[in-house]
Image 1 (cartoon, rainbow, N blue to C red):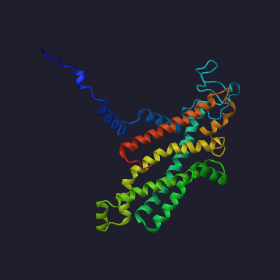
Image 2: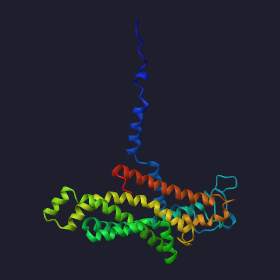
Image 3: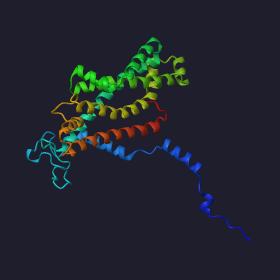
Image 4: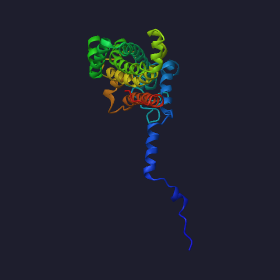
Length: 302
């Protein structure tokens, strides 16, 4: 009597216990770039740089005969106004493109200055140590303990609204994160053998910092800066929505949301598209930053 051989599919079917570790490793160590997020980030950057050339209308050009016109694909829409118009007849698409420049400009300027300031203080605290480390670390702890929205509101109330003040508020609320990150990187790098050998060989401290400390920390700084883009956009949009941020005639996505509050019930597009722009931009930059963190630095340093 011949013995029947089980089908090959049944014999090679992986068990549930064997699949789960593979799935966990794939989700944890996935190094594939988020193409959709990268594409949207590139689109926002193009709109910020070439916005005046690609926008169909000027950001403040009013069409008083076409106020609150719905998007072009709806029944009452008009194709010159692809995303509709606001309460003054201004083209929504053109204002969204103009808002991208304000959002990226304020976020980029604030992150650049906050990154330099935090990096310098983190280098001093981590490399020099001693009482300077204690003072800077306690100052960083104090800033990180404060809710950044409340601190931003207090600063804007004291300084006033405007683009320059918003950038200053972002710098004050962001520098401590860079200082903490750089200090931890310096504390770990300066104990490595090649740094110790360079110090024994008589290499000057500024040269050690420039050649060995900063290159090792720069990767983490760039990742944190990319993640801070979304955080800065949310802060600027929140303050502009409350009337404490960007002021007319400049255009901001948060300011567009504030203008749309009175028309939500019958003109949904005036609030939907600026809100989607904020959400999509923040998610895209955060997804790109998370991918870079997994790809280049698997440690959760935030």
